Length: 156
Image (cartoon, rainbow, N blue to C red; front, side, top):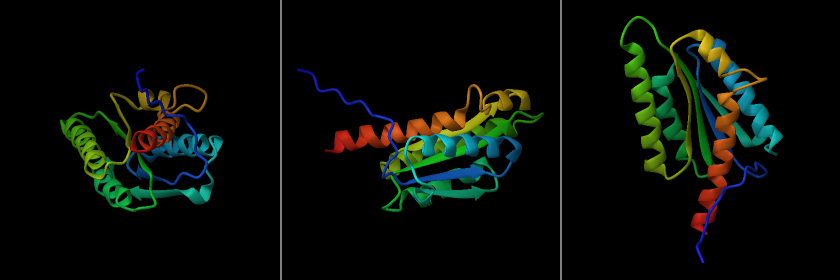
């Protein structure tokens, strides 16, 4: 018979860190609110969540790494909003943030969730942080909880 691992979305007793970019905070505050709401909905207490604000999305990986190294933290959720402008800055920031976050996950062996919006317009970012619809902050919270559970199953 085949062994199958599948994570459940449950927050009770978990300890999660969230790193949030202050740049484009008109979007990242919405992402954070939705993320916190979803974590609470799934059983996490406020005392089990740590939030760290950083200047921009490029600074997220180093803070995520510092938090992921803490023994008590089981997952790190990274929230940001990179909105395309008139220069290649968008491409550089989005790519480096994604690579940095992936590296932190691989280096620490912990779930480090990529919740950075990379959109062409502010309107697209608003749509992806809408409490009544598609909400990437909520999705990031669910991903973190599921990954903590499935990784614990594989470890045991």
